[in-house]
Length: 110
Image (cartoon, rainbow, N blue to C red; front, side):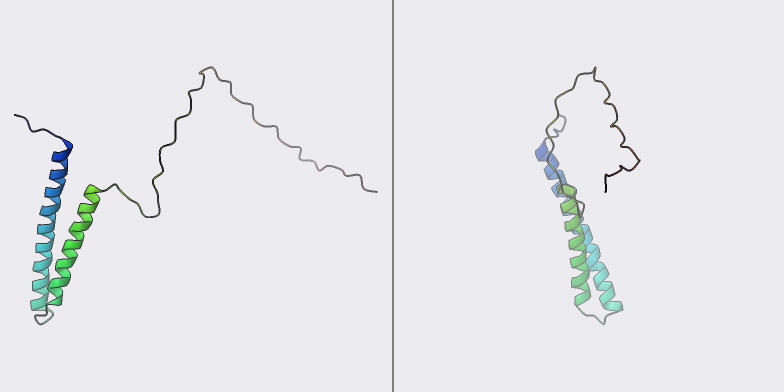
């Protein structure tokens, strides 16, 4: 039987990708934090927490991008405009507007 490609399966696949991404990125962050803690920071706990949090935040951002509509800062999504009625194919091209005279008008001053 061929696998169906319903919208429910698409959501489950996206969720699985997000979960796998969370595990990988938080694991890498944990590893980097442990190494940095041992080598550079005299076995402090904050590098482990910081790098694990960065990994979780990166995976959250990727998951939000995967599920959500693309958003660009400073832009907004406009609703679609209603379509204009179709015009006849035999339309004439409008003539360009007449150009105003470039000579100054003489005023009647006494």
